[in-house]
Amino acid sequence: MLMIGNGLQGTLLGLRADVEGFSTLAISIVMSAYFVGFLGGSRLTPKLIASVGHVRVFAALGSTISAVLILYPTLVDPVAWTVGRVVIGFCFCGVYITAESWLNDASDNEMRGKALSIYMIVQMAGIVTAQYIVALGDVSGFILFIIPSVFVSLAFAPILLSKRPTPDFGQTKPMSIKELVTTSPLASVGMFLLGGIFATQFGMSAVYGARAGLSVAQISVFVSVIYIAALLLQYPIGWISDRIDRRLLIIGVSVLGGAGALLAIFNDSFTMLLISAALMGGTSNPLYALLIAYANDYLEKDDMAAASGGLLFVNGLGAITGPLILGWAMDAIGPWGYWAFLAALMFCVALYAGYRMTRRARPVTETENVPYAPLAPSSTAIFAEVAQEVYIEAEEEVLEDAEATLEDETS
Image (cartoon, rainbow, N blue to C red; front, side, top):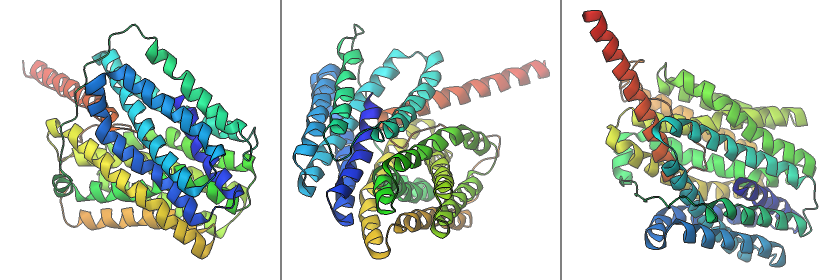
């Protein structure tokens, strides 16, 4: 229900802003404001939880989200919407952290990996469902703003009525940005560039669709294809990454995504737009987890969770700047600036990965890669830490089995 609410407000604001005649630059500022709030929430929510507890934080932030969603259609102004998006971003990050830490505490070691996968599927399903709800209503009215408010309000119930004791909250060990960049320049630069890509897909896809003359129904299908492809290709790309040099896969995936964006520039049929959306979504989302896995190849196990949190922060910085640059590009060259921007970022990731291959040898043999952990772009540091715990445990089990087999053969 939270992801339906978040998916609705992201697409809906872009469409409504176009109806209200906001400039592309104004819309891009509104969209980037969400990630400003998200970064703030990632820093302050752990302190709030430690101070007043999970339940109160979840209730306070969730009710604030509902209030802001209702205020959007009553305060149709770029400045008001920008402030609202900062607040919404802060609050959504906070409820994610609260829910994810609770989920982690409620799952034992045997179930945590399955819970992680289901959580990812639920996230994507919520965003995709939201796109089809948008197509059912009038973006110039009030109803579509009330629906996400209702969904977010209903999402309180499972947490507020839970009898399970609130979990102990442990904060992720920090890692400085300087240490992160020194450890893995490719992962750091790649995550910054991906931040711009994700912000474009999440916040500006509906704006592009409206400026390109697509109907609301077509925009809904277009946006949903991005996330469906992301879910379908996440695990196949992860399976491959555990068996080859990850930098080669990063280059291949980035080039494929960039080529997909170029296809839409040279062919404006709706079918081609969907193919381009699938290629971009299906490569950019797995690339996010792929870069985290690559960074882990150079880290000690105790540093993996901290590095993941740092990479999420770098990704957030890119997400703030991405829509601002895109807004300028779309004003300068029209709607197709959307695809040109995505293509440029993907090709930059590929080029930098190729450059890094000339500067550093492969760290491990193909049988020693740290396991790939599927992560969604909306992840928080808590979710990243849980993912690392799951896959470190899996790696340890594999090593134990291998040692046991070796001992049997020796005896």
